[in-house]
Image (cartoon, rainbow, N blue to C red):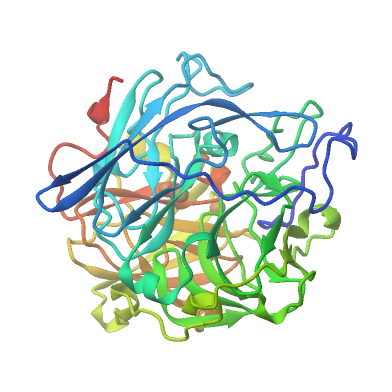
Length: 510
Ligand code: C2O
Ligand code: CU
């Protein structure tokens, strides 16, 4: 049988003893670092916040006794979170400080003196020139200013590197971070502040000297044997006896998870990739593919102080060392006093917010398209409808998989048909509604606005969306070795004029 997202394991190097290789819930949970704006101003009534990050090399303490070289935004892994109110315009300057860096045994860009970058922010956010188009690369020593209006509803999104054929290496090295948009609706319903906890999952394997081991199994995927939460292996987090909101991003390269609580209790899903769901969905487990975000509430009021509630992964792979990949993290319930004047301390709201995309009806769709996700029988390369990113480049960036009119509502059928593989498909620009899976209702946890669809083996997922910005945008598998080799195409909305979205003129000198 073919490997699935969480079903293949390449182990870390032997030679990592128990002394330098943690086994269970030893590390303390670390909140994600936050990024502060370096300048705040007003433009015609719009609040403008300016941020700057430098992509550069750094060291991370993941193993107890050894350091791991990384490449991160400001040298940090995971990168620093940007958190803004809806309606705030953000200028994000990304500096490329990767002069002279080279990935070992990697043939791309061997002519250059460093690594190229392009930065994508998920979540219906960007004009084409700020969308991290894979070939709109910023050269080493240069920087680019990205502008985001943040006029969409509250949501948990993330920014990460997207450079052509380098995305796997750049993201595995650490170039990824969360980005949160807040608004009134979400503030009125859900826990805030220290009870609103963002978590990024990733997985890694190690060389005996502490470096990250790279093996993408001939472009099928990279599956580490150590699960990290916010860069820490299997951490433990102290919690009060109250309701917590968890924003969980799967930032893994290829691994999908089936998380569940060791107590068997449900979590209460309140938001998906594109923000609040119309109604809360209580589930005891869910499939969580790379790039998907799920926000859920955990009710710790029901546990006695001292209880350890573990978040586990229901991997079903026979080859996996369960001690390593079936655990994600643990919550340690404490007897710390709870502020009961905060109404969210014990509230699980049931009715949330009906967003535009979740109110779309299939009858509004003007067109149904078919996207087949598979490995070519001819070339043996991952593709969408037999198109690869190399084909897009060869066409001078004119080849498209779809050409919806501006404002059009369309239905796309996403279908994986090559034996046993799953593909988490990400469509840039839009939020979409999952209408059906193999003709049946979508899973409870995915009944909210999405930008990544988990398309399982032999599944056909029908999604519905409106295209409300002109330009060319990418669509690709978010198993990153698939994206890089070469399961990525683009669609064109309307008839965009110059400048072309891929034109790298917007890269500016530092
Ligand atoms: Cu998360 Cu096109 O990427
Ligand atoms: Cu794929």
